Every structure is written in C-alpha cells, then in structure tokens.
View 1: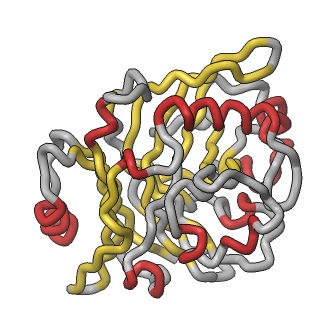
View 2: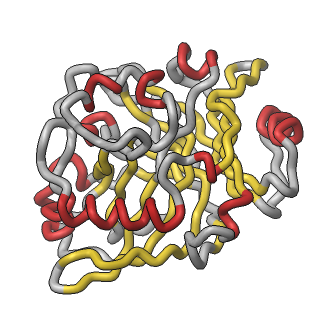
Length: 274
C-alpha cells in the first residue's frame, strides 16, 4: 500500500491490558469511558502541510526505522482496515470497509508526550502495513474477518519469540457495527483534550480525504514482548491469519522460519534499521 492521499488513524485501548503493559494507562486518567470502550482515536498520518510531523508518510512494508535520537520502540501488532469515508456536509456519516491486513503500530515510549500521535510518527519507516491486503466487504457479525487471529513474533539472531499474545480478532473490546459507530462519532466530535486530538480538524486540513487506514487496536503482550524493546537487526513479524485454516503452532513455526503461504493470511515482516 502506498496511498499518500489517505488519512491514518488508530484506536487506543481496544484490547484488554495493552495500555497497562505499554505503560500508557496513566495517559488516559482524565478520559472517562465505559468499562470496555476504547479510550480514543489518534492520527498517525495526515496528508496536509498544516499537520506538521504528521504530514510525513510513515508506512512501509519492510523496515522499521529507529529515530536518529534513539528511543525505546515496541511492536504493536494489529489489524489495519482500509475504509472509504462517506461525508455529508463535512461530517463523516459512514465508513465502508474495503480490505484488511497485518499492521504494526510501532510506538516509541515517551512518558512525557502530550498527545498519542507524538509516539506514533517519527518519520518515514515509523509504521508497517502488509503489502498483501485481504478483501473485506462488511464488518457485520459473520463477516470474513471474524475467523481471523493476530499473531506476532520477534526474531533476534537465531532466537524467535512470540511478541504479542495470539488473539482472535473478535476479542477486540469494540468490533463490528459498535466499533464503526464509535469511530465515526470520534472522527466528528472527539475534542482536543489531554492525549486526544480533534480529528475533524485534521480531516478538514486534509481536504476531507476519501479513504482512511484505521488500525483497530494492539493485542496484549507476552512476557517477552512486554519486557523487550526493538533493536537494530531485529526482524518483526505480524500475521493476521484465518484460524479455521491454521493452528497457533503452525503459525509460530511459520513465523520463526519467515516462510508463509499466501492463502488465508496477511503477513508483515520488517527489519529494524538505524
């Protein structure tokens, strides 16, 4: 995918325990939500000169670029969904899914960051999206995405480690129509408050882009993933796979070997570089 005219958005807090494991739960202490409701959406790319650092296209298929100043980076394995955006009178009234794939919302841990986006885009190579995306016609219950799972691995030298907990996509706190309705509401009405940003302003600055790539939330970490940051030379793998076709053990073996079939999965492999 190399669509520099789309807007890039992410969902924060849509999987149990992720924010706590990432050390970011305290960032949202002022954000009041329901028990399972995600915390916010955030921009990671806005195609507008008015958007400052967010105007730099961060998506790649093959590398994760360590910032020149260094920093603690963690992989965030997710599903990324490409939507057509439907507007009426400059308000978002619909999101029509087109495709989905493996996504790495790689984040730099900045405890003093004022906005979520400050941890998400530090330049080209900040984010990863699989080159091979799978068609998605709907997010209604029973859609093709319901059968999929998210797995992730880190290869360091000869060692291979599960980085995120292998998780079903339907394990997201908000999914299906509930997720779509919530994202649309946030796109139109999320305030600029605390770690959140006014997404409607970014849409206006970008002249109301016709598509959005939305990462819908990172899985919880394994013990290894929670305690290990990325290093130069690491290979990261995110695999979104059909759980009716493959077992967790098969995917782990594929992830460690770096060899995957093309049927029933979307795979992202990135090398961590300076």
